[in-house]
Structures are given as C-alpha cells and as structure tokens.
Image 1 (cartoon, rainbow, N blue to C red):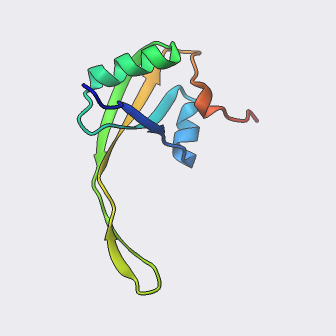
Image 2: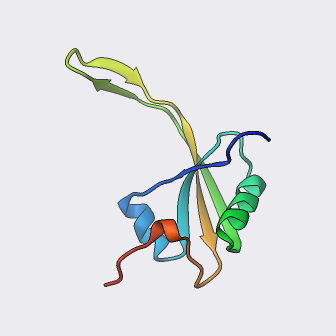
Length: 97
C-alpha cells in the first residue's frame, strides 16, 4: 500500500478525555485495515496496541459563504486505538488536575 495510513490525530474534547484512559483517536486512510493501523501505530509511536475500533464518518452538507452555497464535506475513516496500561502517545498530552 503506497498511501499514508495515519493522516492526523483527532483532537476533540471527547478524544482528550479518552486519552486519559489510554484511547487515542486518529483520522486514517479509508482503505486502511485494522492490521495496517496497528502496525503503523506500533512502528511510529513505539507502543503496544491492545484494541482498535474503526468508524466511517459519512460526508455531510454545509452551507458556507455569503451566498450560502451548499458544500459537500468528504467522508473519512477514524480509528480509536487502545494501548496497554501506562502507555501514552505524545501528541495527546493533557493537563492533569
């Protein structure tokens, strides 16, 4: 496979809360399988993956601009990766309270 598997981390309030529990969310290539995602995360971040959940997010329509033209957003796939206990990914650093 020639494409990039991990596209970007998804940083939201929910994903940051999950990061405290060892779950990290990424935007991934649509054709990437769970095995491909596992290999890429383990290789890039030097961690051990326990479980992977994938979800395909359907593209939606939004209205933008002064004329309120309808724009179709592209569909994408996201992966929620659970790591072994006490392992972290540096992209998701959170402030402890």
